[in-house]
Image (cartoon, rainbow, N blue to C red; front, side):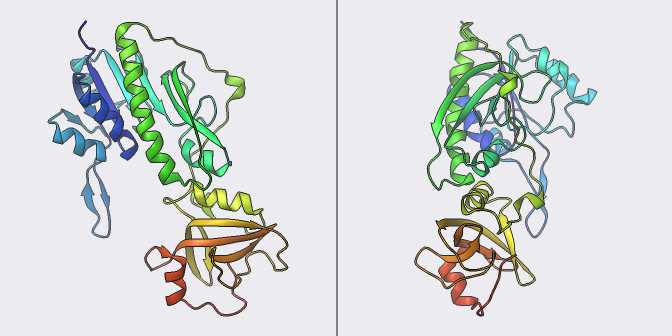
Amino acid sequence: MSKPRLLFMGTPEFAVPSLRRLIEAAYPIVGVVTQPDKPRGRGRRLQPPPTKELAAAHELLILQPERVRDESFLQLFRGLNPDLVTVAAFGQILPPEILERPPLGCINVHPSLLPRFRGAAPLNWTLIRGETTTGVTIMMMDAGVDTGDILMQRETPVAPGETHDLLHDRLASLGAELLLETVDLLAAGRAIRTPQRHEEATWAPRLKKEDGRIDWRQDVGSIVNLIRGLSSTPGAYTFLGDKMLKIYRAAGMRGDVGAAPGAVGAAIEEGLPVAAGDGWVCLQEVQLEGRNRMAIRDFLRGCRLPAGSRCG
């Protein structure tokens, strides 16, 4: 049996393991569709998406449409005539023709156990909400937002203290393996579609800047989970004086505080304690506006905080 011809659609680092795994499995990839190059860094020089770099290294056809809904791209899509479209964090809503034209359909790698955490930021919200288990779903895409039938799922525990960056890399690798298994099943005609339980759906909307601002009146667990869920980007933050302080790593200590929320205590082995609603949040890795990211001990060497300092 010949292998189906794949069109891969994906953009950021999360998509790279999936594309690499399909290449290693020698599936014929008729093209890689990714977002256009974007300016980054201080010089604002155009930088290619990570999937473009991998595709170029393997001399694959690269397409970077501004909008996949445009007729100019759809004409190219028809010419490529893929048997299956595989999607991993592409970043654009797909039109009906792309969803429906391929004989084997259009499938997506989603980093949650659907129907939980549908939407743009499932990894972030999994940690912000304090979930202890998560996973990856391979689903058949339809016109809804992450509402398609489930083809495969795999669960994994969330480690205590695991940050977004660590969970991202784990699920990207897990998703790549699960995607390959799913493609194999589809190619063999043995994939089973299971409709989602829509009444159990929860949402993971796109993050706004204000979502990252810490309210020190909240309980310790909620604040630590927010920091975990936004580390390292976009980063949870507070204000120290008139400067933004991003916090990338912290630990919680519950107990009587005897200080107003946001009050900064004396540094201890666990970090720099800041008073919260039901205890202390010990800052362990931070970045003050205009400075580099650093461990809290290094930060305190160069930034002596006067008595009575407060965050917020």
